[in-house]
Each structure stands twice: as structure tokens, then as C-alpha cells.
Length: 260
Image 1: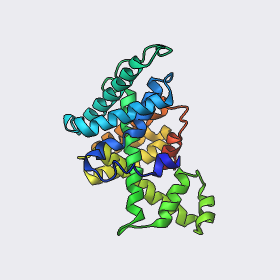
Image 2 (image 1 turned 30 degrees about the vertical axis):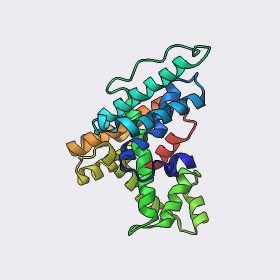
Image 3 (image 1 turned 120 degrees about the horizontal axis):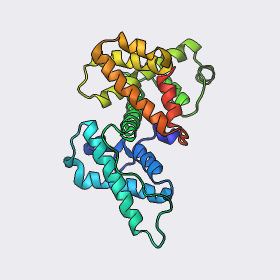
Image 4 (image 1 turned 180 degrees about the horizontal axis):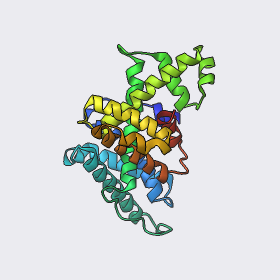
């Protein structure tokens, strides 16, 4: 999970503004192609991911509507088509198994999951950077967050490892989780009001932690906060349904962020 959650982008993309919207989609695209083309080799899928990201960087960055809904469809279709092109050229055997399904339609769970995965990974990376340096630097918080996401440690184990009290660990993780949830909501709704998104973040955490109370919590909430929370909760559910095996631990990390 370390590479998935806390690694930086490769140097060829680091610091280049027009990669900002694209780079966070690299791991989710890899997972999308894994679901759609399970009979292809990991190398073929990885080559297709890199092909489409480079094509976006070099040719297509200006061709999409930067709002998440339009962009995710544009990028998903480009990746699926690039993978099909590669498989048509492979020799001499055809791909085993049925032809992969057509491109996801708007509202398809795969597109919801694609947005969610990219938003969460980017939010974790942004939160990590925020607390590593600058006016809000808090390295113990970073180490606690890393301990949860990368090492899967309990609060008690973190307290022992970092020389903190249980309450200190709890407060630092709460702060980190709130920051990640809020940043995720910002990425899914970049024009959202900050107070509304903060309220939505609390609804998401409570609703994800206690599904039986979710409907009551949402019904009692401000309508705008409810809409933002419902969007993220729907995407979380889509990601969970699609990735029940979850070999790279993304959903375990999502639960560690949204559920406690």
C-alpha cells in the first residue's frame, strides 16, 4: 500500500501543471483495465495506461471539459480504446475470453469509482504534502497517517511507535481524516461552498461508519450538504462493489479514512 498511498509522481510529471488533473487517475485507470481486460497481461495493461496518459499530456489535454464528469468519461474511453488497439495488434493469438463490454455510460459505477479513486488518492497526497512542510507542518500527524494507511497499525500500536498518548494519536488521525475527506469533496465538487463541503464531510464519515443511520442523517441535513455527501457515498459504494477482491488495499485504506 505504500506506493499506492504516499508515493510521489514520477519525475517526468512532477510539477507540471497540466498533469494535475490527469496524474491522479493513473492508479484508477490501471484498476479499470484490470477489471475490463483480466486476460491481458499486467505489462500490456500498464503499457496502455502509460500510452493514454502520455497522449493526454502531449495532445489531448485541451480537448476535455475539466469538470470531473466530462473528464472521467473522456479518459476512460481513451484508455479502453487504447487497450483494444494494443490487443488487436498482438500476435498471433486473440485475447482469450469474451469481448470486453462497451464504454461505460454516464452514471456507470465504473465511472463513479474512477472519480472516487482518483479524488481520494489525490486528497491523501495533498494532505500528506500539507502536513509535511509549511505553516501547518505536523510530522507526527504524517507518521500516524502513514502508520494507518501504509502499515495498517492500530491506534495503540501507533502510540507506542511514535511515543504519543492514545488521545494524541486519536486527535491527529481525526485531523488528518477530516482533511482528506474535505479535500476529496473539493475535488469531486470544485465549486462547492467550503462550509457546505465541511458539513458534507461529517455526513459522509458518519454515514459510512453507520450505514443503518445513513438515511436519517441525510434527511436531517442541509440540502446542499446532503447532495454533496450522497455523491461521495454513492461513489464509495460503487468502488466497494467493483473491487471486492481489492488486491492493492485501496478499499482498506478508504475504510481507514472514512469509517473511524
